[in-house]
Amino acid sequence: MNTKINYLDDLKKLENYLRSDENKNICKPFLLECQRFSDIARHYGGKSQALYEELISKVISEEYSTGGELLHRGYYCPSPILDIIVGNSSRGKILKRLTSKSKPTYRYRFDGNNNIIIINYIHLNCDEIIIRKGELETGIAFSKDFGIHTLSECNYCDSQITSYIYCLYDSSKNSVVEYRKENYSYSEEGLEAVDIFKFLNSKSSPILQHDQYHFQHDENGYLSKYTVINYEGEHVKPSAWDNHIFNITIQRKV
Image (cartoon, rainbow, N blue to C red; front, side, top):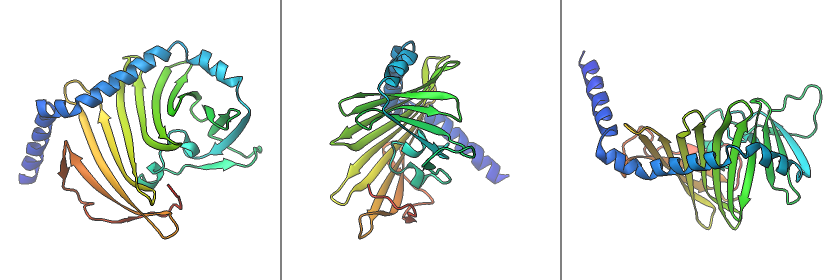
């Protein structure tokens, strides 16, 4: 009985915190970000198909992949670490050739500079176009029946990714409902830390989760281990994973 009372008390405290001015102030930058991406969706809402047709004319080569359904863009997911820190989220693999037994999930279309400009989500019957302006890359995924449903943004510096944003968009409400951002920090060894912000957009009780991942490299420069720190607002939040060292089994240099 006491356990149940404690649980209800904790739940009430959480509800009060989510509705507090303190939480809303912390979440304000993310509310503004959701509004920014909603504006992007509205801007491109009536142009997506025309831009798709324009980009099709620039396609020089194609690749197909299988698997990777849980990751944005599958094999070519912009995040260098998402499949490492999230279980059962393989990138899949590139198909060397298509056969009658192939079951491709994605088709990637490249321009003359070997940049991906279109992704066809074969398993979802939707498409994504990529718009590049300098080192800023904006992705817009849409379908003929439901319009835009995800948006993404990648920032690069000298071809090295510095941030990656992925949003779920509700076209019926003209609103971003979920927002995720990864900020990358590098050292001489390579990727040093990643701050991941997950935001659920609600005017009355927005929810922000912030986790910080720290990476180690082996003697050959491959990612080898990582630890994670959880935050609540601007303060470190105790977690069962404090000081736990996770081993990385995927061989990757970042």
